[in-house]
Amino acid sequence: MEQIKALIEKAKTDKDIMAKLDALGSKDAGTDEIITLAKEYGFTVTADEIEKFKGNEKNTGELKEEELEVVAGGGSANRYDSTCKNMTRTKYNCVGFMMKCWCDHYNRKHDPDTEKSGPKCYYWHWCAMKAYPKYYGFFNGDPYPKN
Image 1 (tube, rainbow, N blue to C red):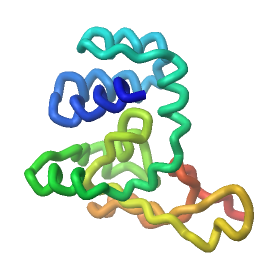
Image 2: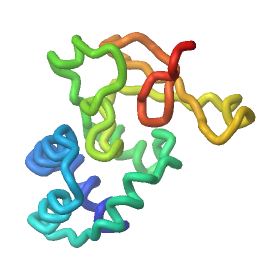
Image 3: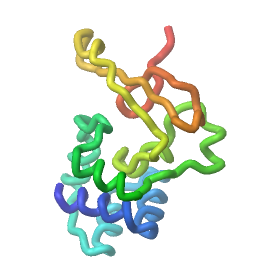
Image 4: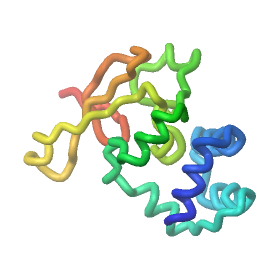
C-alpha cells in the first residue's frame, strides 16, 4: 500500500498526475486504469492494494504533524472553482481521488456520540467557502437520510 500512498503524495505536488487522477476518480475508473496510471509514473500497485486503500475509513481527515508542516509551506489541494457554487453537499472535487486529496476548503468533523449507537459513525460536513450548507452525514459525504 506504500506505493499507492506515494502516488497520492506525488500527485499533491504534480498537477499533471493530479489532473489524471481527478479524471479517473470523476468517472469512477476501474482498478486496471489506476494501475496503468501508477505504472506510467513509476509506481507499482496491485488491485488488492487499491481496494484496501479505498476501504481505509480510519482516515478522519485530521492532519499529522508532518502533514501540517507541508501545508504551512504553501502546498494546496484547492479545487474551489465555478463548479463549487452549484453544490449542495460534498462532491468529488471536495475529497479528490479515493477521498485522499481533500480540497483546502472541505471540512469534516466526526460526531463521537454516534459510536455509541451502532457500527456507523456520522460526521458534520461543510465548506469554508460556503459552497454548500453544513450538513450531517456519513463518512463518505452522503447525507444522513431524513425521516
